[in-house]
Length: 169
Image 1 (cartoon, rainbow, N blue to C red):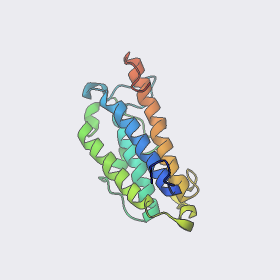
Image 2: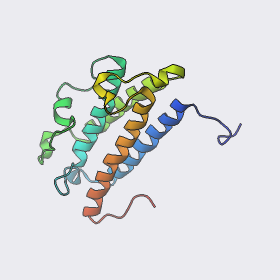
Image 3: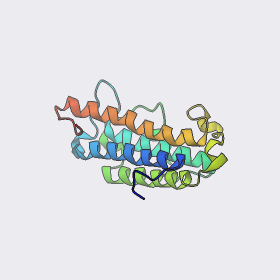
């Protein structure tokens, strides 16, 4: 059977989107030097904050659905949760490699959970902590993919302010 003939389950398709959206963000991040990771445009988020925030979001969703504690360091949530204001001091943040590791750890944990979704589990109600963002399990998977693209747009704005050409297209 060719890849085109194969039928993906809803969970497999959603997980595929998680990979695509994360690869999009990673490709953008690769084009920024370490000195450019803390640049903000118009008071927006910088790439260091975005990296930590994406790890935070993946971890928060996993922790909520699995009813388990965070897999990230204790101080991570305080720095990267929704509504926090990015610091302009790069020393306030872990370095690129550490943030990439946290992004990978949290995303892999979320994907491992998402791979268990089938049948009625796809439609299980989201835990209260994330129900206002995603009403059920399969929506939660799609929401994190969309979340990557939203913040990828912020990185694209940073790149444009630096006069960089588009990465895609």
